[in-house]
Amino acid sequence: MRFACLALMIVAVAVPAYAQQKIVNVEERPTPWIVNGCTIAPRTSCPGVDLRFADLANADLTGADLSGAKLSRADMRHANLSGANLSGADLDGADLSIAFLNGAQLTGASLRGSNLAFARAGHAIFDGVDFTAATLEKALLKGASFKEAKLIHADLLEAKFYEANLEKAIMDGSRIRFAVFQDAWMKDCTGCPANWQSGDTVWQTEEKERLRNQQR
Image (cartoon, rainbow, N blue to C red; front, side, top):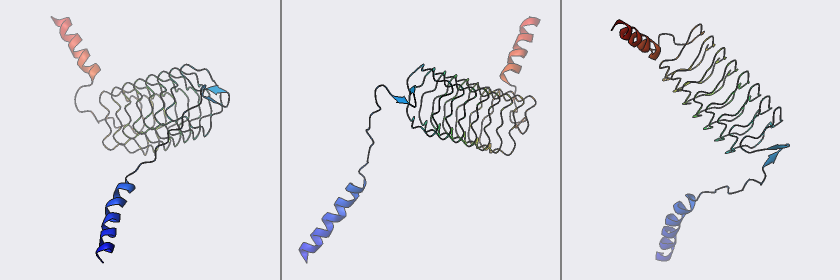
């Protein structure tokens, strides 16, 4: 009886430790890393390339030319696309969560149903982009341009639109709870929270300072 109890105690102690073990994928990327004829590397030039459903997680595509590329459903989690050219690209359903898009050019791209949660896209150009049903939850979008962009039924929960340009954008039906629009420009925007900011914007403050300096 004592032996049976001791055996049960050993199992009870051993199982939690075993359950906490993690399986880590350590598969290395090939060198060179080429997908459908496109070398996955900084400053690569692959305009119009077909990368649909491609696994590009953690890829370094800094400054890459992927204009007009087909990237629907691509896995681009934590990819570095800073300064990349994605103008006119098809990114419908792509996973760009925690991706770096600082200064990236995405004019006219399609990101319907895409996931940009926690993305970092400071000063990126999203003019004319279709974000219908996309997720930008907690994305950092300081100084980004969304002129004439469609943010229809998008998830903008806690997104940071500091100093963003939302001129003529459409934000109908989007979730904006806890989103920040400090100093955002919303001229002719449909559905934008035009009265979100109660104090002066940064440009209003600068104009007042300029007028005060002229009066001295």
